[in-house]
Image 1 (cartoon, one colour):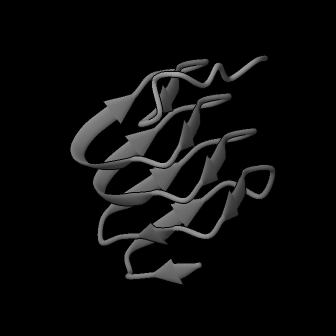
Image 2 (image 1 turned 60 degrees about the vertical axis):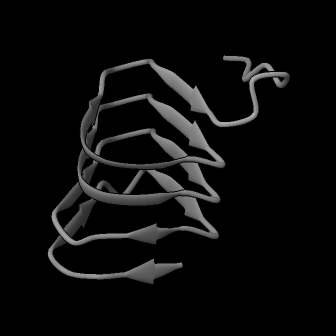
Length: 74
């Protein structure tokens, strides 16, 4: 994982194999894997996989996956 400050990651969030920052907030119980996020807010319980996004808000309980053939289950 690569962090480019400022970045705030909730202690209960799980982040792997991703680049975060600058200006990223990852909320509680989020799952982020293989992503590139900048200038982004990821709210609680959201999931992102194989995605690149910036200047966006991923709302609570949302799922984002660049591979549309794969389903992310709760």
